[in-house]
Image (tube, rainbow, N blue to C red; front, side, top):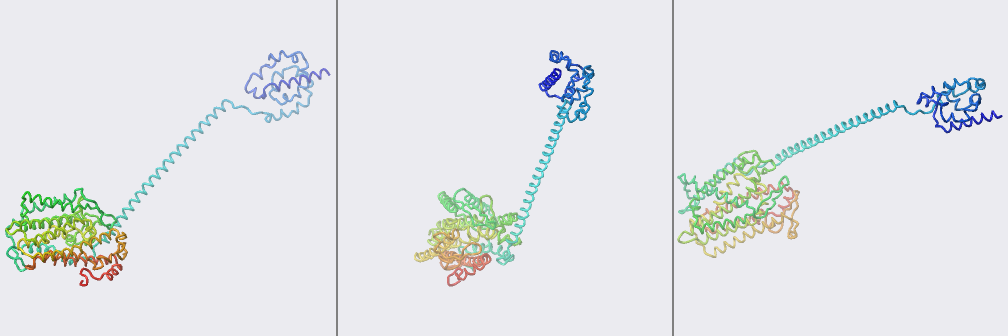
Length: 599
């Protein structure tokens, strides 16, 4: 029994030691420390040598219970340890040799199942670092590949956007070209006026000849249609440098007055493309400034009567200047865009377009030539010529006749009215439809100023003494004509600007498909062109100041009447094409064209 107790104690002590030591397998110890299998370090351990249980008890080598220890049976390393095989106590122990449990130990037959996890050895750590490094390189390579792909995608999108923009621009240009071609077709003049090409050639010859004949027909000795005009044989009458200098200098003075930054800026009527041109309306200021210059010149004794003396030479110089300008404007119009061409002068015939005007509104910087010629060069030149006739008549011993003073005042008020209401001219047919060609340049430089002043020229060369009561009747007729002229024009201009204005609410109108309204009440209920009626009445009053001694002064009202009748016909044809059935309703509502109950 004492022996069995000692064996039990030894087993419990060995179990306590095995529990107190770190749990490491023998395989780990053998792999980490090679000296454990070869050196009897266990017997040399100080802790074991001092232990009394192990040194003094001989039963340790003979104890059969050691073979049943689970730790020893399961450890293959302890079975192979040389220190234990060589121990005499273990070899000679009969219990060990005869123990059947050692041969049937499952730990020896299945050692792999008892093998615990081993910590990674240094080569394994290096390989893991290499693996992690290679994975980082792979990720970096993938990132670079992704950047390349992203860059290529961005470049592709940019290229596609650029291509899209180019395609859109090309498409817009193609549409613009198509639009221009369509506009060319739409704005192509289909109907020719004045007898077509043959007719305009005739007028280009006949109009200058008419002005020259009438001026030369009215001389001091006689002034009638049967008088043979005197044709100057001296070339100085035709090529007078002083006359040319006066014409060109007068042109630049008025052009300067037109572009100085004084006066309000007004928007014109909408054009075909929807845009509006801007005009500087300072015509009345130019009128006042011109009168001041003339008064200063009279005070400084400038020889303005030279205009009367060189009237034929000035007329020739103005004609040549108008022809040169017409050629320049036609060459300029050939380079103008399709939308800038005049609807009445785009036939393709050089002669016809040259006469009617190929471009609608030619400009040079801020200077609009059509407005400048139609109002400044024509009307102000006409006014100055009349004033020069007054100065010439005042040099005679009898002084200036009252009839000449009256007609000069009448025509001066007409010019002042036109320049005061300059912006109203922007709604006329001249601005909206007619081009700027030979008809405009010659008409405003020669025909209007020299032919419209025929009454003054007649009264200078042939004195007419009219009673004051006749002059009073003529003045009354002039006032009536002016009231009709100005009242109808003002009503039309105000209605065109805003037909829904409160002051226009009492006026009746007819709507049209173009968006405009046709006025059928007020002055415009009397006839379709009441302003033309007032213009003709004023023209008659001017000629009445010359009496009935000659038919030459009455050429102006006759010409104005025929011209306005033809103009009304042209305007009616344009309105018929533009308004269609609305124009027919308007014609039924307003039956008379110019003269109420007559025409």
